[in-house]
Image 1: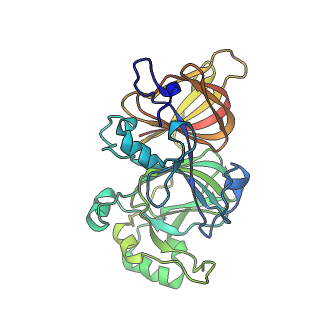
Image 2: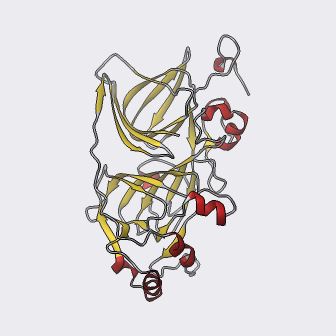
Image 3: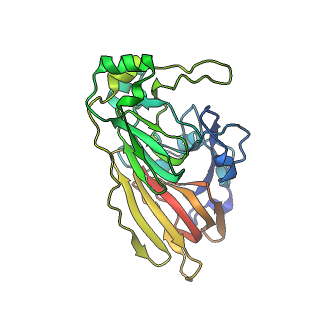
Amino acid sequence: MTNRNSLLSDGTLLNAPFLLKPTGKDYLWGGSRLNDDFAKGIDLSPLAETWECSTHPDGPSTVASGEFAGMTLAEVLKVHPDFLGNHPRTKGELPILIKFIDAKKDLSVQVHPTDEYAARYEKGQLGKTEMWYVLDAAKDAKLIYGFHHDADKEAVRQSIQDGTVEKYLQKVPIKKDDLFYIEAGTVHAIGAGALIAEIQENSNLTYRMYDYNRVDKNGRKRELHVDKALEVANLKASTEPKQPLRVLKYRQGCALELLCRCKYFEVYRMIVNTERCRRLVGYQADSTSFRVLLCTDGCGSISFGEKETLTFFKGDCIFVPANSVKMRIHGTAQFLDVRG
């Protein structure tokens, strides 16, 4: 598996970046933009989600370049747990999951449990706190974020049965470049017309409260989890989310801004433009944590080692092991730079 180009002079393995290939999901609310805009080449219609960086068994990522090509990311990290870094939150496993989401139609109204609830009632699974970064949005696109006013559990339950629960829900207009932090327990839904990058805990626990009485391709309504949803949902009035103050920090060929920092992950937006300068952008993950580069626009290349080059395009996802080799990024592109 090891080749001479992946070795340092002392024979140890280079912690080199590699491309990931996602698993696709054909949920009924999806569209075609993940294939159309990001050239995913996944034979699903609709294509609702791509799980870009994932070790979750419901949608594992596969390595698409370098010496580990063909292995799942989970298999690689089992052999090389050092790629995760020494941050306490890794605990020997990838703590995050990264997705692209194309909402041609409204997603179900849903809620995710906390880690504590999941550990107690869901066989030790993780809860789910997540962050959304809006890549594109139709003119009238909205998302659901909590309740307008304090809500009563039984009244909400009855409104779900009656199909009138939307009257309680807070709808927030969205536009390109917005970001939202969705804490576990927050009732939420992505609305039609949104193209989203999602960074979340490594979990697939979703309690569906309401699904507009839709049926799937087999004519069946999707399962609801009303009892569990009402058990974990925050029924207090939610303050309408405001966009945080964001500050771009510039250096030659690159600009960086912090989007989100929480106990589960850190996310930055990185803008690279080396077309007009000779200096390439230096990049490296330290021993603390791995990094993931999700290319949301543009293209370019990453060079490392003596002659190694990795070419990337819009929609690509690149895993950078902790304590990585020093890299140089060239091109005109935007990334979400995710750190565990």
